[in-house]
Image 1 (cartoon, rainbow, N blue to C red):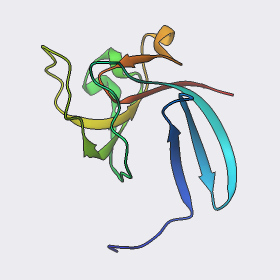
Image 2: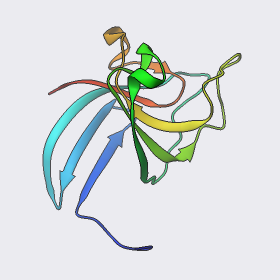
Image 3: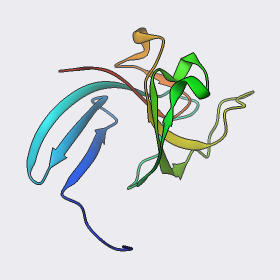
Image 4: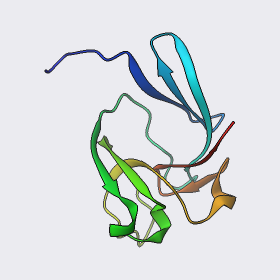
Length: 112
């Protein structure tokens, strides 16, 4: 239903590189994430999850799963061929967690 609100949200703090699962007013989980790098910063805004996709269908760099978002990356890195959709996804490179190292999506790993 357009305009409907949900009590459960994913909130990302780009500066702290942290994703929170929030149910109502309660933070249920905090997860360290990697965000977009200097040349392709993660866009700010409110986005909806549009699709849940298997990461394996798109390559090992996306980890197990992808939550595609309604937003788009307007500053893709030079030579990037992965499209411009924003997404929250896994990674096969855990060293990027907590850093600005992706193409503007949000990568995740462990809960904190």
